[in-house]
Length: 318
Image 1 (cartoon, helix red, strand yellow):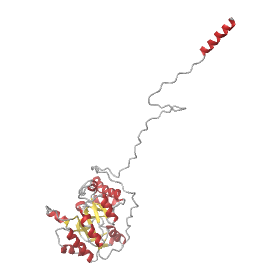
Image 2 (spheres, helix red, strand yellow):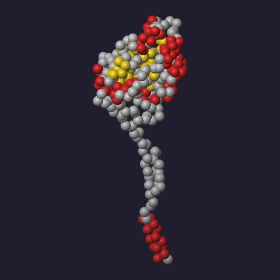
Image 3 (cartoon, rainbow, N blue to C red):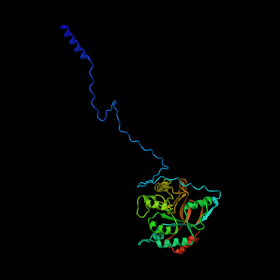
Image 4 (tube, rainbow, N blue to C red):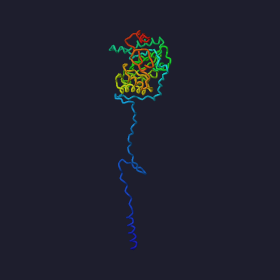
């Protein structure tokens, strides 16, 4: 009997000495347990987008309106490489300069009337060009003619419209279409971005481009370039070029200087950006390859007569 009691006591002592299972750890807030290993998942840090290196530091205030991105841009047309005769080549043709094509406002100043060709006068002018066998060509055709000797029509004319006023869709476009003419519109891109009612919309610009018109830069804000800093001029010129390219899917190649004012920096930037040429407000009909960044034009004055127009186109001016 005593032996059995001793065996029982010995067994109880062994059980008391056996290791006990550790209690389950208390849950920690924010950590999710996973079987078989605990995984601590941290909130991912945002990865910054790569920063594009700007061409130059621009101090001017950027455009407040975002620029829509069009469908992917096609390969830009290559700039014509001038042949050996380019330096001596000339082309004599009128580059006509229009602004508004619409009725005169009731309170129009004399300056405003000068900038505004009334629809009936515009129709008569285009009828004269058609009757005389003129063909409307682009500045691209003029560049090819001067750089490479590519033939132009015997009677060629370039039709340009400064500032990109919306009224040309109503009053100029139908007349030009009736004669098979196309034109070049020099647009002020920031005013288009802001959706101002006097100016073309980007949808309208795309519609014109689809008809064979050329949409080219008249800078971002139409501020005078001459005498401004290089950065400011770069902002105005390159900013307009890139905005047109983003919206239309094609890179423009010709600049129109605001108010016809430019300096050596303006011309140098036009070259660096890859523009093929530029137009001024200086009168003239004779164009050369070497002076392609200062091509002259003939202003069509809304106060003039049809005879004035005929004389200008036919060579009444230099």
